[in-house]
Length: 264
Ligand code: G3P
Ligand code: CA
Image (cartoon, rainbow, N blue to C red):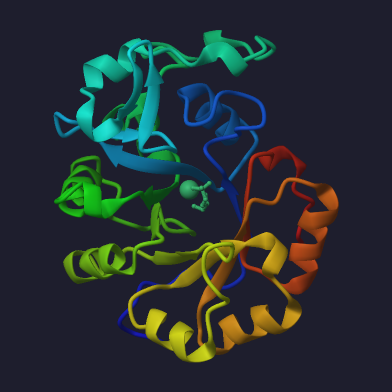
């Protein structure tokens, strides 16, 4: 039993709504998150960047296509982002009236998300490109404290943080060791992590996230041997979901949280 990293639940299979229920609504919109909650996802997944004026926003890419062309998030204010609507891929089949206040389709800040859902919802938050945003870890932790999201007493952690950037995760681990951390791997860009590398990861993280297509039974065993959990991404087809469950992974990222077969 590890004592210096936060524990993840032993027997829970975690359904992580990737960018919200993003198969059904614009990714990272309040609507996509709301749908994920209705579909009983265990977590809503946020990808976090920081704007020019220091606002943390949930959006996948580090840039946005504005009428003035491609702009980096770090060079754009939150007010500018708010005005860039992104409902073009929304087919209108979901009742938006479920939501009040913030436009359910626009780009939202983490503060708006935390204030909308409170601690009724669990958050699986990715720190994106942290080297572009000095201080992003501290800013995010401050918000998590402010919104009371770190005083865990539920069956699963209220917050899990993830990043491809090991240095960022180590910073968080030093500042707030109670938060479970997930080291992400993109095996398109890197080779599969070795047992030796995974042992090092287990010193600060509770698990890994990795592309689903590279996950094998042997790899799941290897990850579990070093006392890490494994959450493959992004698993959207029923056969792939079943394959992951059969391999014994601990949860999946999916755009379709309503399609995950019952595990127990
Ligand atoms: O965070 C896990 C997975 O979401 C990583 O891929 O590109 O969808 O953020 P991406
Ligand atoms: Ca992500």
